[in-house]
Amino acid sequence: MAKLDRLQKLTILADAAKYDASCASSGSIKRNSKSSGGIGSTTGMGICHSYAPDGQCISLLKILLTNVCMFDCHYCINRSSSDVRRAAFTVDEVVDLTMDFYKRNYIEGLFLSSGIIRSPDYTMEMLVQVAKKLRIEHKFGGYIHLKTIPEADPALLADAGLYADRLSINIELPSDAAIAEFAPEKSGPLIRKTMADLSGRITEAKVERRKSRKAPLFAPGGHSTQMIVGADASDDAAILQTSAKLYTGVGLKRVYYSAFSPIPDASKRLPLAAPPLMREHRLYQADWMLRFYGFSVGEIIANAQGGLLDLDVDPKMAWALMNRQSFPVDLNRAPREMLLRVPGLGTKGVGAVVRARRFGRLRLADVERLCRSTRKMRPWIIAEDWHPGARLDSDMLRAQMARPAKQMDLFAA
Image (cartoon, rainbow, N blue to C red):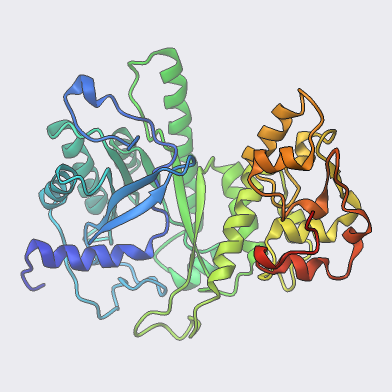
């Protein structure tokens, strides 16, 4: 490997890290940097912007420790057989970069992943050393997200959780058969076992923290994973079924979806073209329906053609169109569970409606103030002064719902 300066390494390894979608800082707990004399906080080239649940934008230094890799995953630009320019940081270089970027107010935390160099244990130990040096030697109180390696010694993963706010293990593909075909050095059962072990440690740490605030934190932001969309033949139904099992079976905090991007010198097993980006977007919407809106995978994919979600309308709208007999929903009477199924009505809007109707019957103008806009939800709701009437059964309804909001005039007040 030719000798590179730090800027050259940063250029290569920041670009290589862009393929990982699981870069987020939501769910982290602010570490007590004040009492320890540290710097950095999660409450305020290689820089990515992720968003907390409250909409706060958080800037992270997103890089690989190295893009050298002994694995040959067909979908990965950094696979061992790929003819890409290689680079590697030392532990101290990553630590110095993080501190330099923070002191210049460029970032609020670090997202660190890596190719597998020498061995899984060797690589994982270097990742842990970065986080440990930041926390202990530099008293860094900012956000740290480490990508962990399921093939590494469990003791190293246990150490990682002591210094990182969030851990992640990318399963990449939804089935063991696809993993065996496209990532032959990886094992689906081992990845899920490692996820389950992490979940157990996170739960144990939370129990200990409830008993004593002096108990150590362990990955307080939980653990996450990524699945690539469109690299193999798996449809949206298979992807969502895998996500649901990961949420319920191994306590995963979040699944990220990344549309496959064709890579140079790709394997003949891979598709020549990328899937529509809208497919990735629909999977994220369906994922939120699973986690926050009380839908099952079966309900979401009931009308999926060939196992694929409708690209013209969002999956919540698609469910409503298929279940018109359940609408319109009376906002003044319906239970919260049914309000969550109204297209255009989010979790915050549902909470606002439930609180406000305790004090009087809601009119359409009241709902407008609570939810900013009622245009998308008008066909599906009843308010004190509003009923969609027979228009709910109009053949034009689906076409209207698929249009941009400014063209949806069928249900104007």
